[in-house]
Amino acid sequence: MRTFVAGLALAMGGCGAAPAPPAPPVGVGPGFSMLTYNVNFERYDPATIDAIEAADADLVFLQETTAQWEAGMRARLSARYPFMEFRAHDPDGGMGVLAKVPVTPVSWLPSPVGRFPAWCLTVDSPLGPLRVLHVHLHPPLDERGLISGYFTTGGARRTEMVSHLGCFPDAPDLVVGDFNEEEGDAVELVEARGLRDAASTFPPVRRTWRWDTTFVELEGRPDHVYFGPGLAPRDVEVLETGASDHRPLRVVLQRRAP
Image 1: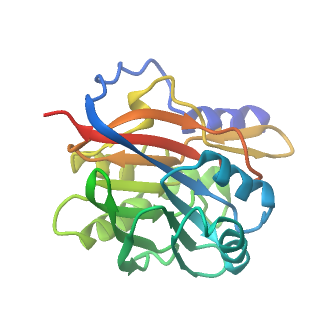
Image 2: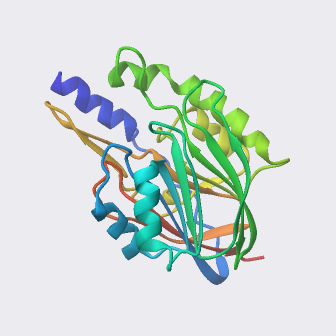
């Protein structure tokens, strides 16, 4: 069992020698920082809010928020983030956005496979207006559990992503959140729309999720910030902090140089 689960963790991280990624695009002008973080609906802990406060990103995307998480965020972070939006989806599909700049919700998108919703928003950023798709895709679980589900649920995530990408007439500037896969059908679909994974432009890529089992610690990289051709990442960091099984992923973006 230990060997098989360890193999699963390796599969989640990819295997073999991957080709070197293309050089990151060159950015110009001011940086704009963002954070994506699955806070874990079952693990309310002020340490997770501490992590968000310390990261001090300009824009924060949260998955698995609850009424308790919303209350805690508003009590602690309203002065820092005057623009807050939350949508509930019990028990574990809630989402939040914390922003230092105006954010406008466009549409709340139910999952076509009955799991977590997605959220389309526009952001009035110093880089210009940004169209953002905030996702939390189908978990790698089926009726037989995690190990089986890792191999059987990729089609569900693709179906969700096909549906969610329809919220804008063309590709969004950003697709962010918990994809529940490092590589797979949903990732390939986003990349086919011309977006790039910020973390992959700054190797080595670090894991953003860990889960202790009786036998071994699983790990993976389900959390992503995908950026469109008008943007360029200046910095990417996985923060080893907070009480969730996920780690915050912080990315600084600039406008792409002409």
